[in-house]
Image (tube, rainbow over all chains, first blue to last red; front, side):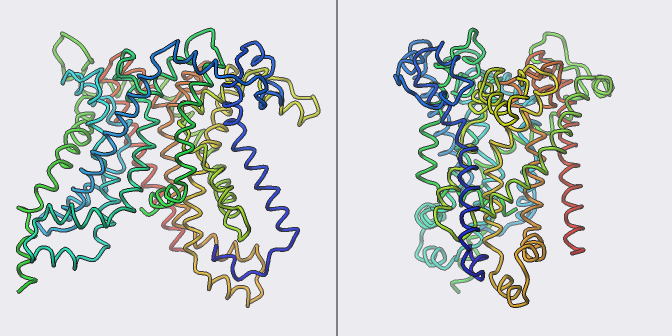
Length: 284
Length: 299
């Protein structure tokens, strides 16, 4: 924004071109989502197929929630939601604790090998999950972990990138308060819990958002480690349902809407925080 | 005195408890699996097997050289990178410039543009499969735009169209994320640079070329590298939409790793694929960092 300050006021032509472009782009980014919602509200499968190639597909005229109740009737949908929410929330919460603790340990103490440890964390960031998926599958299979919640949680708690984000934050903020507390006889854990963490709300929020998004959409790993519906999270359940023929598009879109709408609403509400989190991924 | 007391309490003895959980998890679930991929790639390890594991030297790597599907997957990924990375980067920059204007409602539009990025890829793939139907909305749109001369195609099942269709959808989904990163970069450019340029009588295009672009070098480098690596990891949308077909037109390396390691349970061979995949990712990011750095130093 400051970039524009020096310029004279935008002319009317400039403005109208900008708005036209922005509106067209908004349509481009929104139409698939609107399509998803309007199709999910159409109870008549034949009508969905008839309309899918016309602008009428975007208007849910005989709107009903039949597809939504169908989804619950056709599969243990509540279970899938429960699985996803449980897996994601436990991973993110444990992740916040473990990753911030490790970063605190690296940022606040001086010991031999500290620098090396930080470099190792940075180096680990380059390893994509895909390169450890296969050996991890072998390992967790040997542990007897397949088809469980913990196989989808425990390996994804510690994350070098989030440790690094916390580390950057901790080294940049003043230590005076902590030093005073230490002299007053507070333990390090108390300092971490009562001083460092409460001051870290912005970075906690950023990491939580990034971790949440990654886990919520995680597909490759649960596809390999869940067999039945019992521990299956939403993305895999979606893919399994999508693979059943004949496809019932109304039900599929109702499923998609239920999986997407809460997250979309959450992010529209938290949009300022989301923008900040993403910007932070850029400082590498 | 106080300082000394403080220093005394900063040794490893005190740090250890903070490092322990993170270290244990990183070692168990990242470092050990990562290193064991190298080891496993020289063995005939299966997921479940009663036969003893044998060292088979470079057999897996030799097999990989003759594996047409691996090469097809690699070729597709390079195709994806060459087409998608420049398009998506340029598009993201254009979006960022647009919502960075000092006019009303830009926050609203910014929010709309990033909505696809918070939508799970599996869901995105499902919606677009519907849109890409031969009688679906994309065909209708192209027909209207071309005044009826467009012949409807079954994008997903057509060998020539399936991959471009997935590329287009991937850009739709991912560009908002890069836009936000560019936006952060734009907001860090000092206003004084533009003010000075205005005094010197520079026009908007000159300001963009001489100030905005050079100032965004680091951001652009980051966006290019991260988009390239995302392209290498291409899996979700391909698995859901085409499962690599038709005729391997959308096959990718990660899909191959999945098929070999999980479906056929050839852990040894999949590990060899994994090692090669990792070395490629590493090489690409080192080369890109190097090239972009050179450029930065020159300018």
